[in-house]
Image (cartoon, rainbow, N blue to C red; front, side):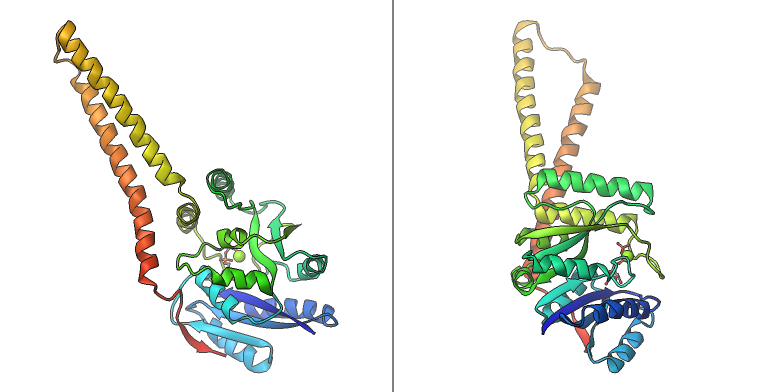
Amino acid sequence: MKKLSIVIPCYNEEATIRSFLEETQKVEKQMSDELVFDYYFVNDGSKDKTLAVLRELSAYFKNVHYLSFSRNFGKEAALLAGLEAADGDFITVMDVDLQDPPELLIEMYSKIKQGYDVVGTRRADRKGEPFIRSLFARTFYWLINKISSTEMVDGARDFRLMTRQVVDSILELGEVNRFSKGLFSWVGFDVTYVAYENRERIAGKSSWNFWSLLRYSMDGFINFSEAPLNLSMWAGAVSFITSIIGIIIVIARKLTVGGSVSGWASIICIILFIGGLQLLALGIIGKYIAKIFLETKKRPVYIIKEKG
Ligand code: UDP
Ligand code: MG
């Protein structure tokens, strides 16, 4: 029988793991004539009793496995560790807070049987999400799809069902700075989406705040687009050409009607403008160099302290 591996990153989730497993096991029963399930929980350096809960569950259920990191490495690292460990014919990635409804797996698997390689999920709406967060999220997707050739679907969750072949391709991408939303889409294959209504997490709280999301979206831009670099190059080109025209005008005026000392304020404005532009461009270049720096160190993406 074919095997489905479920990868579940967990960070401070002692309150949700048991209900997650219970709900998912109901689906496991419903699908038991087609698939066997196994679970790979990844404890991403939780500070609560997540690890204790995982130890207990994996001792009790023989298809529950866990990996535990030496510290918090972030969800991207947890996803990677889980995908590397999972050995199923099909692999899915789920949040533990039941915002990714396990019963969708049935519909998703039927699409896989129709011949798709990847079945993603997307939220039909952003109900229950703060207005500002929705606004920024929408702007992010709009902008990144404009400037990056890798398509990212608005509202697409990380919750997706993939064939072995797709996961192997994702694992071949050896980058240290991992932006999964982009990597999943970059590998291609036949992808379809299942839409569902947004759900609130059952317990605990989201580990994302406004700033961490902003940083995350910056990573998306830097990892999947050269547009910020092009932008600063064009801004530089425009200001250079403008200054050449300015110099010609100044010289011509000196030779014809004579120079003047007025215009001090405007000169200061221009100096500040150009200075600002240069710093901005340097900052953007610096961002890319920082990524290259991290990439060349070839540090491991995560460190596993305990397995079970
Ligand atoms: N998570 C993780 N490491 C982190 C932050 C989050 O493994 O540093 C996990 C978390 O336990 C959950 C999933 O990633 O299973 C999604 O996190 P969360 O629900 O906080 O994000 P949201 O649903 O609000 O986007
Ligand atoms: Mg969540």
